[in-house]
Image (cartoon, rainbow over the protein chains, first blue to last red):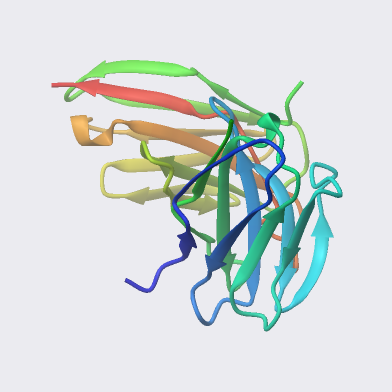
Length: 113
Length: 112
């Protein structure tokens, strides 16, 4: 399967700990997106990369959040000093661009105790 | 008011019924997406459309740009169609096309 992959699929952590998630997009896709989805809600945009450049960040992405895509391939999303409000599903999507629809990964479910 | 509104929020149907899920949006868009999300999180793109109508198997999506409204129809529904169906819009052309704004989703349950 050469779809978008995300690791880990589940992460349980204690408040105050740092966590890092990884997204591996489809190899030829130069665009990569991170979204966050809380229970009962639709996903919300967090940030967007075109190749290695982070072109847009949501106001949702506080200074405790940082995302990288160092070589324009995989991406990492790090949350420092996690809070219970960070508990959510973190989704990654990749695309070649319009008009081809994006491909979504399976998500990483974060639970902060 | 959310930029993308879906109705109904929950829908229960009997196998074989014709199903309609509605989506209204309040902003200018370059495209509207219908997506399917199963328990566990994975999201699959069903349709991306900017005008007219698209059909794939038992699924049909329509959009009325003037009225800022789209519908997703499922004909001859089946229990395996049970999932959350999400409407989302792309607001820009160019690189950030898929900075999507999502509705809250419609939970569809199809009973045998």
